[in-house]
Length: 178
Image (cartoon, rainbow, N blue to C red; front, side, top):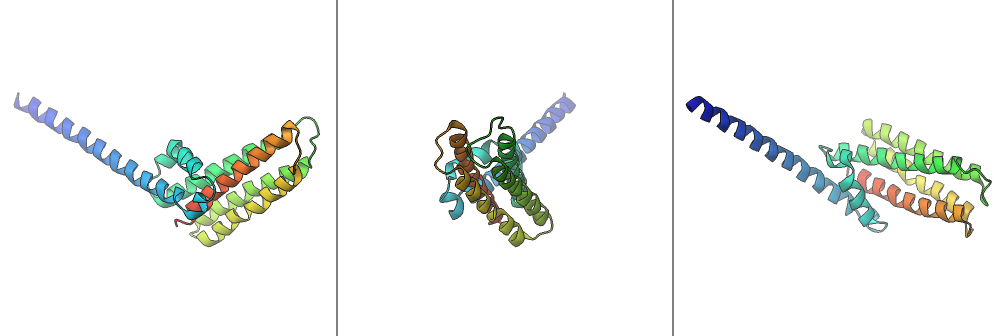
């Protein structure tokens, strides 16, 4: 009976310890996510999108430190740019804007974020920040191409581009933390 009680106590202790450690890691990444989303650059764009995105994105929530969270954020934004490039590439009928120019702008954003990710690996946050910031130049090109067009495709791409700018702002907030 004593060995059974000791076994139960030991198992209970291990379960409680694992629960406590898991809660501590979650609290740390939640604090880091809040830090990114409270950055003044993010706050001037879309803090709500930042919080909704990072707190529901499993790799962000499970990041164990700020540098890992920044890497996850950069990867996430790069994926968003790839989706938008795919949208433009997939347009079947010729749109009222320069499709090639918009596609190339999104591919440039993808490449900027690929470079930024490598620079974070090399502990060069300043150059990574630059690569992220120049992505706004590419969204401006897309917005200038789409302009005030009122067709459905143009409106959709404009909406996607405005949200892309919010995602870029999240990456700026992240890179500002390291």
